[in-house]
Amino acid sequence: MSNTMKKGLKVFVIGSVIIVALCTAAMLILSHIYTGDTIRKGVSIGQTDVSWMTKEDAMQMLAQEHAMVAGDRHVTLAYGDRVWTISPEDIGYHYDIDDAVQQAYYIGREGNIFRKVYNSLVLASSGHQIAIGEGYDGDRLLSIFHKIKKEIDTKPKDATFTYAAGKISITRETNYRNMDIDRNIELVENQLRKGIFGNIELQVDERKPRLTYDELSAVNGVISSFSTKFNSNDVNRTDNIKLACSRIENRILLPGESFSMNDTLGPRTQDNGYKEAPIIFKNELVPGTGGGVCQVSSTLYNTVLLAGLDVIERMHHSIPLTYISPGRDATINENSIDFRFVNDSGYPVVLKAYVSGSRLYISMLGKKRDDGLVIKLKTQTIGVYEPKPDEIVLDYTLPYGHEVVERKAVKGVRVIVYREAYKNDNLEWREKLSEDYYKPIQGIIRVSSDLYKISQSSISN
Image (cartoon, rainbow, N blue to C red; front, side, top):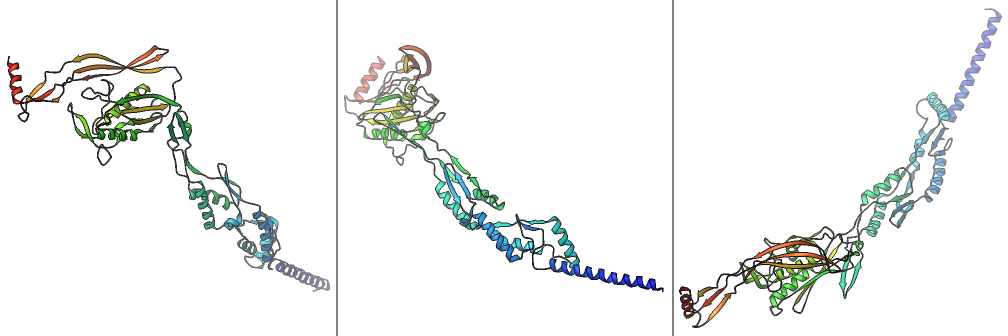
């Protein structure tokens, strides 16, 4: 080998040694940098760059930053004009800083020294962001919502209506409100999971009760009234009339609602407060529980007609009555016959019923007519029918020369009832409401044996 070649080989060997030494030195330096106890360059947690930080330094910095941020954030719950504010401290709200720093620390530490160096160089160039987790105390949040629920929830309460001394008084209603805790907590949790604080409108189930102030305020006076007379000396019948009045007193019907007399009065039993008094059964007055309630239904029937409302069920009695003219009565039987009407006025109506002395009064309050019409009822008799001659019945228990009228004869009658509307005393319209036929009732007289013979003799002659 020539000296020149030897010299060149020597230079090559020396150069290679120098290169290897330099590479080794570089790897040692890089190894020291990228395998130390600091977080790799290019790593951030949330919006915070934690490159080259120790875990302790990163946790301290993040704790300070997020404490400042959390302190300025609140969850505001709103319902109507009421507001509840929840601070992070109220629910133990916190950031999972330890977990995020641990994740940041172990990024780029996988593999051998060469892999670590390579990964670290790529990481420094492209960067990597770690989302910081958040948490809170669910029990504390639940406790807060239980308190809010007590403040929001209400039971429904109808508006009330009173009428005394010609004055109307109405109190406002209370709406039904119910806040579903689970549903509203889910709204808050959905925001907290995203780290979002802000305003949340609480979801509350709310319903108005049946009667509201706004509806009842349309009632401004008496729109019809009617009264009938009764024998107040009949104590049981009087008590039944008073009880029936109490059942319909202050009954409020909203537009479109119907009224049932049977449903309102309830069973005519002693357990339900009714007493024994005469009732009509098979054309005769016989003892029965609840006698007198038909006078209340008949009085109400006329009040309804005078108010201009639509009657949907009504039946007349089998015989004319003493307290009201034929065609103007309304019988009821809890098992088969009802008196019903519907409030088709477009506004609420209120029933008022009471007894004073020997008279029964029923009025209906509502929105007074503004068309100037006055409603009247007209009864037209189109036929009168004589009953058969009295039936004479022999009664051996009667002394000579005595007789007892067991059933008075009653003439039959056919009547038509019209409802008429007048304005300035001029008839504006008329409608036929009913045509009723009351059969004539044959009288029954019980007589002693001597009178019976005389009656039979007169018949034969």
